Length: 254
Length: 325
Image 1 (cartoon, each protein chain N blue to C red):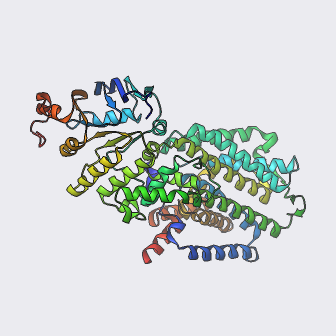
Image 2: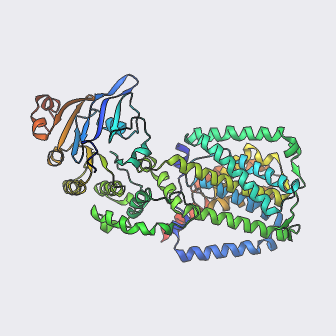
Image 3: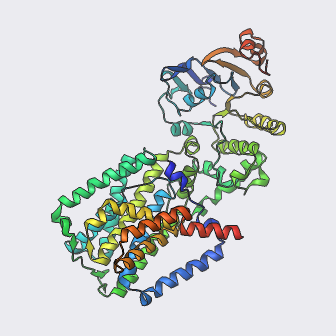
């Protein structure tokens, strides 16, 4: 991270997305500081996942701009964003189901190599990536499952595999869409530890419902409601904000 | 994508058998192919091998990318004309004529692939069909090259490398077998290459592959180009072996037939399409002299196949062997 780079790794201005007249995201100005863990929270249907899709270009914004490291990426393609260092996970676990754990991670490592189009070479050419892939798998606690087919993993382990795959690209900005959704207590703890470990040298923007995860991890929280930013700041401030309390009224998060 | 999803491959051969079993089966198959012309009529066997290669090349798209092309006859037929013309008019040796056919097929695949690849499922099938119909009508119009309704007749088999005469059917058969094995070997290599690994990932989960930075369209266009080039090799070899390139080769029914062969043999398996191709050619050959309505019988076979063994012959065998294990 050179000193020339600005403090903000990601910045949106007036980000808006309409679906046939329905405004899913409205005038969102998001500023993600370099090296921080930034959480995006809000009630169901607040537009969190839509914002994610807009940032990673899986959706095109109706209006507004997205800047990554001061480059305008408003109209870039999803694969190009990934190559710039913005890599996302998905709400529904995104693994390659019929590949083994090792192969899943290796495909991601391969993305960085120049051999992706080598159709005349033996697949053994990829063997040199195995050690690095195994290391990443070990890092997320999946060591014993190296040769298990991904589809056979438990839900929590699939999420861990997904994070290992994302980490293989060594992304500068990692976007995690509900990393602990649908997980048991133990798995949640493991993912929190994992995120703490991997945050070094990168920025993490995550959508998360679990308030204990959000409060324990994030430096900044942005609360979305009906596609608009309701509040922003550290957990202590945001959790005392009357508007936020009202938005969450009646839910367990109170 | 519904069509394609429901006929997803049941696992490739390599995924089901251990290395030794595979080696033994491979050796036995090649041995069988070597003695085959002493048992069956070489002319029929040559045709069967050409269509087997055609189906394997087609399967590269349907089985390993998951896109159903309904226009592969355009590559097969055009390459047949190209190879036939090169051998007959330019006097190229057979191996060069076939190579030329492969290049023509590949070039067409690159152009058509680049146009069609952004579409999926039925839209991809319709675009490829539409373009192949344009090629068909061009073949009718360009009578000076294609011979129009009569076809390009009297294609010389010539001398291999300018040395070995292929007039003898047995010699020709072994040449066709060599082309088939080379083509099949290349397909095996593509599937088991670094590129094949990415292709597999794209088929498994395309949005995830994109989010990892893969520009998936480029991978698909390359697969389409390779598939079309190998289809061209099959078409060119057929023109030399049968000494005829005709409108049948470029007609839409041919595109349908190769789908049938692939599904019958087992989509997404390596050897399945070859088995399906040989089987359909065999059936047609046998029925042609039986007085039965060929298309109806093949239609019935197809319906039964789809209803009873959905994974195709080789696909079902793979599952059966996997279960026993």
